[in-house]
Image (cartoon, rainbow, N blue to C red; front, side, top):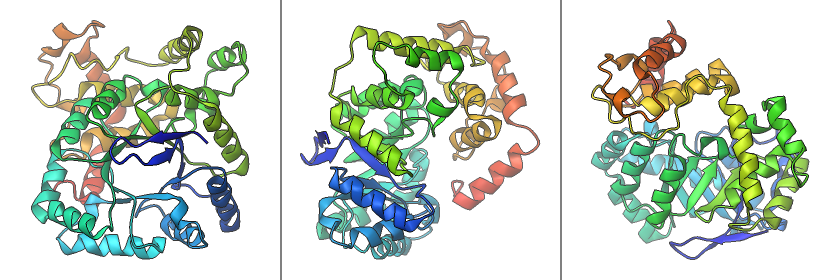
Length: 389
């Protein structure tokens, strides 16, 4: 196993982290996988309060003599916090589930924007974090994020975080927080933990045949998954790449790849291969937005790059998944950023290097992503997660 140094505390963290959101249904098989991962050098396990039974299973396995060999990352859901006492209520439940008295890497889960963070601040989260760190119950504090670049950068600067977790892969190089966000956070000294390295498997199972052919005919034989992982591990800014490994075969393959990779090992030919695959995937997208953000800020608050990113994802992830992402990333925040807010002022269009007719395309996004189900679903999610409080 290759290890990367956490620049904040100089801990050695395995390049491959075990994502615990989707464990195999067979708990005995899960135990075998966790132990195999530990015995082969994986020392970072990522779970969360809201992952069904995940903390309990992980805690049960680690209690069999493995706790001191690993770093546990788990998360507190902001929507469950209504008063100061809720911080401890959730945290102590997590300690009990995980059968431990401390968490190595603790995250504020799916922190969407500064508004939600400021609500938590008013409830006393800064004081609570300080207390837990003094007691040694939290060793590193961070946040996980889904959304656009500008809000990510704002969150990086809003508190002295010790790490962060975000979606990143070769298709999202210029989407969501993207490479620019990654480099910004790394420049602040933050370890970068990456989720969705394969886009939920879409960069393996949903690739066009033309893209599969690029990998099949490459100068070296590697699976699409291996290429995707190597692209991430090639970057010195990346500390840990999480993978939701629910089979022994997948686990062994990923460990093997993680043991072979080096930083800055790609050749010019390697980057050309990714360029070809992106070019093929770009043909499936509806709007040629590169996520450069020159169109921003929108005077009406539309997050234009994120709207287009979710809209384009319909071709790869399917309409239902893309709409869910669209609502999460633009609709449930304190001040929504969805496409229908556009008033067609066209201020953005004069700044677009791709010469996209942004107002027209946002109208198409609205038609495709904001059907009759949009407002009720957005209302339900906002009320459930209390992002409007």
